[in-house]
Image (cartoon, rainbow, N blue to C red):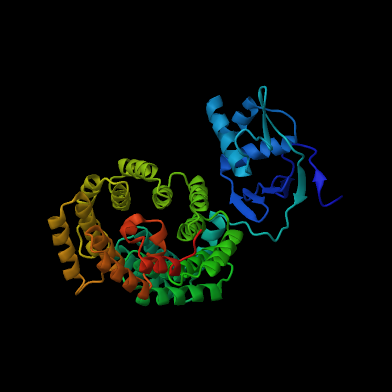
Length: 458
């Protein structure tokens, strides 16, 4: 028997064979679609739809059969099925009215090109929740419990919560010094303290690098660890080539990881590839469509691509779903400012938690900028003065001081703050291209020089 054979019966050996068609290879066991060097995870219902179509190998598959296979006993409309076919066409790379893979025919659909099967090598790893869970539990109950607690606090993203997460990850490492998930948790936490402006990058990023280096020394096949390293190369070192190599490796190791796709999206934002960033965010969201953080990721990518109306709409929906999801309110305030609506931004900012650990990192600088944009200079100056006073004892990033100074028309001060931010390697500098805080500085040679030094131009 040859290594590749034509399909003879529907869904034959789906778990041990991949389907090959055109420049694509579909692995139904792992629900992965390979297109050239790209790998994309396929959601479960779309995977069932694709299996039915390729297994028929050009024969008609009726709408009734597809609906029964995908939704089983649930009632479903033709419109719902058509929407799933549309999403599958997008994943396959079809363009509008160019149905090179899936044809609509009377009563159903059929696949347009020949399909073959090829055996899947047994050594190919399958990443799933059960496998990951078994690996975690084999490392011991105490480290696993502390890791779960740390992960819970890490997702809250506030300064106190991130610091609490570090305590749990460190407790896990005291039980098992080689516990890779906890090392990754430490690296993520330390990086976030710098990226969310809670700690100086010169203090936090080196600790994050040290933890992720240990994790990769123990497990060089960890996709999440490589994605974390990509983030560090991106936001700390501004090493775009190295960051891309790490994220490419992470995707090859586990294309079904939403965390990997999240970091890929942010790398694309930093390098000005907004369409690619949106594609990665959409890919992550298709894997976990109910995830509020992933919906927020999509909205934030839209914000950076200056699609403010859609970004605001998504964040408004998130807050209607969970009004305690305050981080969505934080970024909706920012989107309102960029959209030229400072009054709505102020309404959001006044509802944010007023904590000393959080105020200098976001609420106060955004509030001062909102008042400045609204023309209420006296209020803006008062908040700015409070921020400068806090900077004597608390960590305040120069980027935020530059945002306020630019809003107040102090262009020389804003430029000076940005240059300090560059010297301190503040992680927000790559966003100079995508966040229009400094439009008034755009013509200055010093600003153009800084723009060139902080990242590649797409």
